[in-house]
Amino acid sequence: MTDHYKVFLIDDDKVALKVITKLFKPYDVEIFTFSNPIEGLAAIEEHRPQLVFLDYMMPEMNGDEVIVKVSEAKLFSDCALYLLSASDFDDLQVIKFRTLGFYDVLHKPLRSEVIEAVFNFHFGKIPFAA
Image (cartoon, rainbow, N blue to C red; front, top):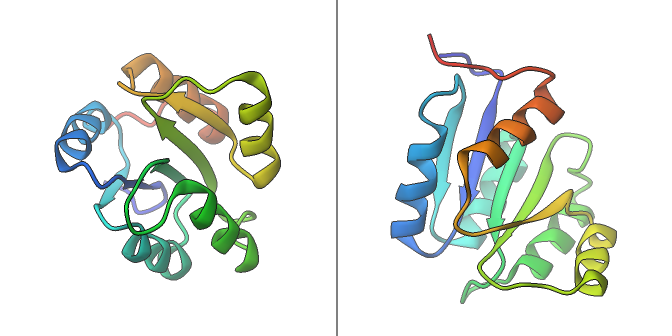
């Protein structure tokens, strides 16, 4: 496994973390999971992953607050953040999230073809595990 592709999953729902982690198994990426957004944010600053999938609704800090902290730390050149949510946001809310710095809003449950599209966009190919 390469350490070139680092993917962080931040979600306070541990079952959701397990389900999403399984979707990443076919790919040659290092998966780091965090159920606490404050710990996840500290890890983003320290390890600079290429991709971050972040749940919107979390008790300690919501997605808006995390993205502001990432912006303040000037981490956008290092990583792309995707907002995960079970909620349906209207177009204006999605524009707001993109303006804040999220690449896009992805709906739960996350599907394998969505992950494949994200990897193709950011990595230029699908990095399958050997």
